[in-house]
Length: 394
Length: 230
Image 1: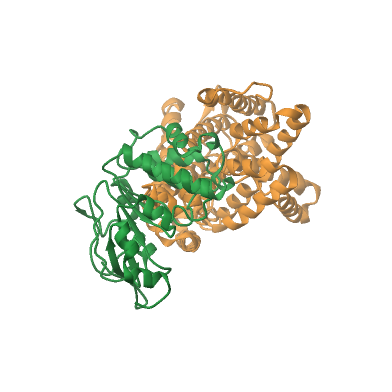
Image 2: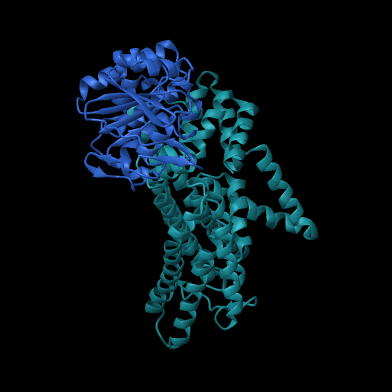
């Protein structure tokens, strides 16, 4: 973060703050791309799950954090993505002759299931979006929860297609790097594919929420009357957010099915949507980085704590979560940025305002801007103000 | 035009015209139906009977956002802003939609004109009341409207801020001679300063209509404002 830079001219500001941000992103993606090859299969698998569920949480946050709509039916699109990919993978697997070359098999066997999952989940999200957003802010929560219940019940009743609770066992993805093939115990080369697709989707979401669409989403979230008076069709803006989020969830679901060798009807359950809500709140709602960070830390915590005290780890995880959200309403990202601000204030006492602003502009969006106001008052008082505001919003 | 709530006729057989380049003030005691009338005009409420016509087109069934895009801008009695969005972001949002999409005045110039030039990076939630009103006005102007509906723009402003507001509207009149302005206002100084025509509303009906001096002398209007029953 450019803590020691002089004030940039207004016209130059976007560029000067984009550079350190870009460096940070490249650093994280670079580490995620290089480090796993030195790790064991288990750690590689954990990172893989962080990426996939992180994408799911981010797609949830586009609807929840940016557009202000709490969707408990987000699992539906994840589940459709997962089953769309799984059915296609199975169909290709049973029709492929054992002697077929890996080359064409790789291209078709990976791309077709991914597209099928994305298409199935994405199209249904687009189709349902205009109906669901019409239900009003509170009705929306109920209506989306009902879609999750219907999807789960339907999936349970068609065991022949979905495998029910037992689920479907899937062949490993026909993907190889040199002689290294994807296995069920070790994602291997599939990790690279997932990282690539998740990074691309996050970049796409970033471009969307920082552009005019993001502005419209935040405006609708905070004041629908104002949005209307400025010429925005509120229902269309909401439907757009819902469709964008649903498509991301479908991609995450497809990646999940293709890398875990197994998929069951559990993916449709509304509790899966609730997971995304928890991870998003934990990391920081209404931001790009928050849901990714929240999911990663949550999964790491669960892994670490379940080894520590197997029977009681859910209690420990819940406690850690509760404390974080209680003390830092802006989530982990708020905590990290708060620490960065504190350090900057300590190191450059006279320059706090600008430093804080640039730190925030670089990292967060949406609620980050709201946090600006709170931070201006400094310390705990500011955080508490932000807390009050958040409570009002829900 | 007519609008009733649970049998109470908030706006009853009101018929009036706002012509291009005209400033009309809508006055009347509390509960006269002024804001209801404004909400029917801007599309927040549907009339029970009657029509709303904007620039020759019947917009009675149009939702508010479509009317805004067609050139009807309004401000709200209680400022309606998005707390975490900055002043600049508000104006940019206003430029995304509407009649002259993309060919609107630059936010910088507009914010300077209303006196918010040095507050463009402040979130709307942190603005003082007077500045919120100014931002509301800037947003309405950013739509480059044909007709502008102002709902008590001077309420809660300091005398200096009222003076600034008056200057703004006068400047606007000089600059855009085809802009129609409908002003709902309690502050009679503001009304008599700006309006070319005054419509007095009482219990949902038009009590009197005419140029400001005539309205000031009108016996029925005086009676209503002194609290007597006409």
